[in-house]
Length: 290
Image (cartoon, rainbow, N blue to C red):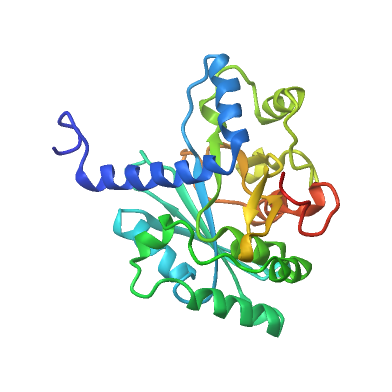
């Protein structure tokens, strides 16, 4: 049924179905997301998702050019490119012209700027993706590839937390984001952050709990990633940081009068730290799962 006539277009329904699947996979390893939802709903809040982020390597078929294809097919359009030279990352934002769907942020590790061992590991992982898998299937297939050895995870972790995360968790949503502009019981993002910390939820304090500013047209904050058991090769279990939940407040762009639609590279770089094991107790790849 056409949009605006009692139903949604098929493309919009497909896009929502994909987002719903990504959300289910995300909350399965991010229990704090459900708790935060419950806390906000208890205050009567209703809110949308601001954006969804996924990570990959710049190696086919798990690079940005492949991962963006399902979103482009479902109507999202490129809306900005971002460089993170210190982390050897490249990212791209996507917006949906309907305004009814969240933004998408895809990033990839530039393996050519990394060690020979990391490049070899990324190539091996990419080669273990099932042949012929459609791009949309790559976003939802669980697991994305067979479990890696925990020793490889540890070696990757020593060089790049981002690489270790992708190798361990595969292609999946790394975070979802509360659109703070929708919230009625918090004057701003800092008040929301204070409330969450009072509830015992740890936030990423890299630089400041609130990244960005009204002058930059975007403020962001995020939790510290949940720690969950992951099965590595040979049935070895380790608890490692999984995903985090983000919060974004957008400000009107004086050039258009509309809310700013992009991202701020410096803030995003700090938010990448939300999955870093430094924020968790010491123990290398993590303590054995219990």
